[in-house]
Amino acid sequence: MTEHLKFEATHISRVFGHGKKAVTAVDDVSFAIKDREIISLVGQSGCGKTVLAKMLLRLEQPTRGELLFNGKPITATGDPRNHWRQVQAVFQDPFSCFNQFFTIRNQLKASFRLFEKKPSPAEIEERVDQALLAVNIKPREIDGKFPFELSGGQMQRMLLARIFILKPQVLIADEPTSMVDACSRASILDYLMKLKEELSMTIVFVTHDIGLAYYVSDSIYIMHKGKIVEQGPPDDVTQRPQSDVTKRLLEDIPDVHREWIPREAAVAAAR
Image 1: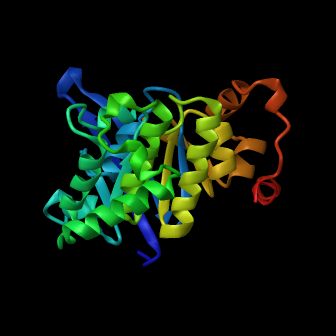
Image 2: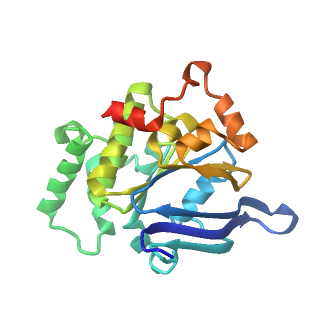
């Protein structure tokens, strides 16, 4: 074990049900995620990537194997809130993450319940305003508003504002751009990269989009039927694929996007 690893999994599996009805969602998976690394779990629906992400979040427990966070078993923190202070998530449907009967601002303020030492009311208000401004939302724009009064793109930014408040070590991003338009998608990805730089976070993307994974990741893990069938740097996985699963994912990309720009050049151009 080395200190710079955020997560280390050794032969972990997650099985639901028993006997003949047992379903193996994650099957004998091993990996290591470094501090401040961006990795992507890529695969089609039902491949096990979301279940694996839930294990990283401590929403599911491995049936077999060992999963470590910062060198310790993921359950060693006792109270799950200790883990959630350090590992947070943004999900595909932001509306499901907010109570429709409470205002956005009150729910952002409620995020401070995870803190061991709660700031003063005045400091909470100030930090909520700072988080909103960080995702390009003027505080007065959401004052008194409920989730159903905002667009999908605005709600995704509310999730990101919550991350700015909590400042976790790790962010799990589960299909965070799949329900918004192209313009909002680009903005959300920009905010995620801003989060990584400002908070020095590790990010785990969960996505079916290997093109997105190519441009944002340091490492890509391809999943199929609960297993990691290929992994490596983005250029290796996309330009020299070894698995038939990876090749099929690449074939789903329209021909107009098949000419890959080397990742380092693309990132430099974006800056």
